[in-house]
Image (cartoon, rainbow, N blue to C red; front, side, top):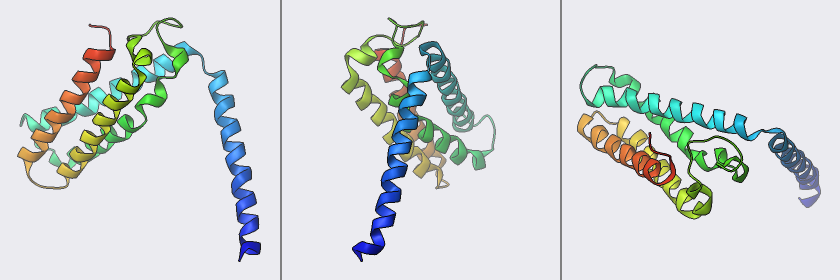
Length: 157
């Protein structure tokens, strides 16, 4: 059995090393301003999907079939939020709306990000029902998670 697994283990190890090397090489090439630009695009995308659900829960339109797609996008973006805040993209390195508290209070930031992801996952679940009130209530929890993070870690507008 081990004999049959050996090629799989070797191939897996080679792929892991290659992947780790490529990630490090990619990070070395990223410029702080470019990462901040990408981060801002993700935030704008998140905001657009939040607005899409807001229009639904405010009963301005009746495209409830879109609610799940918006919720899944919100969850997907939130899942990797800390990744787009590498330590070398703070206000000391480039112009950013992020406060230095993101990196000074990294564990609090990660916890806030995790809360957003958890609430977004529950929003995805809620969109699987036809209970519009449940979707509205869960949307509000996602909104509160976003707002709480912005209050703690983003320059005021």
